[in-house]
Image (cartoon, rainbow, N blue to C red):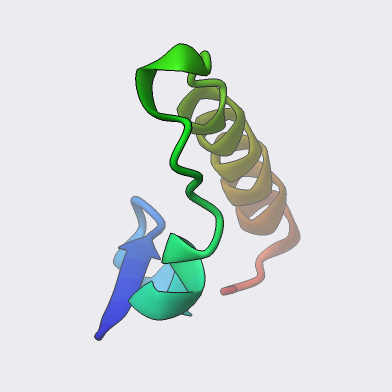
Length: 60
């Protein structure tokens, strides 16, 4: 199974396109004890990448 996260512009490609098995390796069993900084970090990186990609006219 593949997880695909497209840019807001469908013709611009994907932020993330990876096998779910690969993604799971990044999760630990620490659970709720660890502050979740992954989503805000990923969100910010995706926004910067999308803005950069759109300004350069790229599509991935």
